[in-house]
Amino acid sequence: MKAIISHDIDHLTVWEHTRDMILPKFVIRANLELVLGKISLGEYFARIKDLSGNKWQQIEEVISFNESHNIPSSFFIGVNNGLGLSYPAEKADNWIKELSSRNIEIGVHGIDFDSAEKVKVEFDRFKQSLSDTPFGIRMHYLRQNEGYQYDSSEFSFKDPYKIGDMWEFPFQIMDGWMIDKDKRWQSQTLEEAKDNTMLLIEKAHKANLQYLGVIFHDRYFSDSFKTWKNWYIWLVEYLEANKFEFVNYRKAISLLENTKNEVTHTHTIFST
Image (cartoon, rainbow, N blue to C red; front, side, top):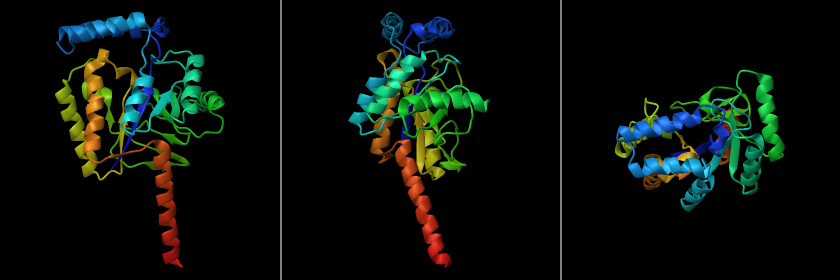
């Protein structure tokens, strides 16, 4: 089985959230997790320190870790605001150009999904920074849409499939669902999160999936979120130990298209 690990960039700085409810929710959540014993006092103070540091992304840190394990990095970046995604378009544009220049796979972390015109606006904004490089999309909060070269907004135990000309890549594992589970705060220990994850990997094996989709938000690769960071490190090492091959969406599409062409060619030979 092959694994596709991708990262949603939901935040860049702390102070981009002065006009939404993210900061109050962050403080309330940190206090609640401390009181419930889900995080240590050191981790709690690290989160508070993050506020003064004005840095809520760990993009370079994730890339470095991925490279050390031969994992091709894939990021989804927003070019529009909504639902707590509040960083300015010019900052997104800087990261799009930076990552693109390093041949790191990037796609749109989409906001608009119910208007073809608005979807096209996001597409065009992103394309301006990427020239003719094909790219895909994952909707923020996993809302559904159609378009782009590929989409990875669907949670299901299915292999990639096509919607028109677009490949849909279902995912099976997301960090928050393993660690928060059915709460809006951390409800699982690291060991519980590992157990939850292994159950899903076993389910993927039983479904005979070709590709395992994993979402990890870059922000949590930090000692301010130790359970999240340690979970991701463990997951990568677990997949390595179990002989998973790491690929990105571009590579997967190439493999899928080649397989499709081989099947079509074989069918043509035997049908003549």
